Amino acid sequence: MLRTRGAWTFLLPGFAARQPFAMLTLSIVLLVQHTTGSYGAAGATAAVTGVSMALFAPYSGRLADRHGQRAVLVPGVLMHALAGLTLTALALAHAPLWALFAAAVPTGASVPQVGPMVRARWGVMLKDSPLMSTAAAFESVTDELTFVVGPLLATALCTTVAPAAGLLTEAVLTLAGGLLFAAQKHTQPAVTAEAHARVAHASALRVPGVRVLMVTFLGIGSVFGGMQVSLAAFTESIGEPGLNGVLYGIFAAGNMLSGVVCGAVAWKASPQRRLVLGYAALALTASALWTAHSAAVLAVLGLLVGMCIAPALITGYTLVESLVPAGARTEAFTWLTGAVALGQAAAVTVAGQLEDRLWGGAGFLVPLAGTVLALATLVALRSRLDARPRARTVARGVGHRAPVSVD
Image 1: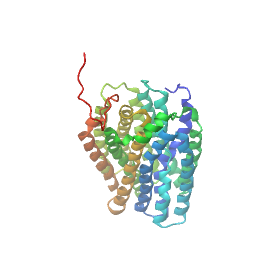
Image 2: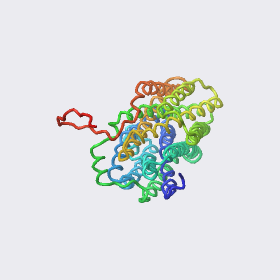
Image 3: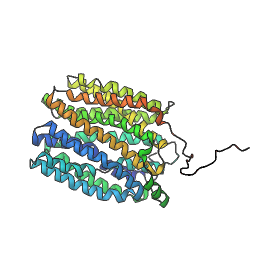
Image 4: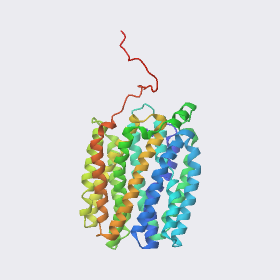
């Protein structure tokens, strides 16, 4: 797969441009908590960013399908860098919470959707190839590698350099990586007049299976958000704030390693069945997080939770290939990415409030609730994940005779 012509030209800058997704929430939490002394305020600010990204990401993906990735990405990364610098300046100036919220909205809305754009490029370059499942696994591993590097980098910068260093570095990486990725015009999906018209009148959200996957990914986002706040609060409570990045890195490393295994295995079970079973394992392991009372136990549980996330993510993204037409896949991928961000935003908010008002570690109840509710929805609506034949058309508004068989 990696020998595909032109692959490395968008993979390397794409990796740099993906770091903001892994660094942004944690960098905001650490900066705002430092300037306000409240995990609730920090979580709420990060949540506004996440909600904004979740709402605007699908619109960004739809525009990319319609007008091309470069046309959306260049102004987006410029806006994100400017908004991130503004949010940093306001936090350091001890601006009121409403001002931080106002700056968090454009910061989240302009987060570049590089992961979905890379997946869309693979879909074009490997069209009808058996390597598509390998590409889906590779992209999940790449995502999780950013969640190994990103939190470690953000924590190290915020705790050893300056509280604002994480957010400033995130803005620089977004600008540099995003512009380099946008410059690779020859690998981006072409926008034809037919595709332009189809995207203008269709939405990936109309596919029932995409809506089910969104709920599933909301639960995954609750794990990410709940662990980010709860791990930060836990490590501070034991006097070892530097362990935050290490513990989160262990969690992400488990995610990455299981992604490698998923990409190497030739699965015989259907992706629908794999998703249900894998998600059940995720809910089971996430339910045990709140019982941990030491860093060692939390590291083991975090590793197990991480190992259960990658199979669910990979299978979900793989199902998009069979559920959604090629011309709307960037939008579909951004709906799923946005669902993760929305779940993460809600989890950060609730977990922050729980950590401030209840006992230490109460924030770990958020991944428990999020995954259990999402699993119940997935089990109840799993039949909607079956791909429908695309050749079938339905006429509307015209009275046709009933079809008859002809020898």
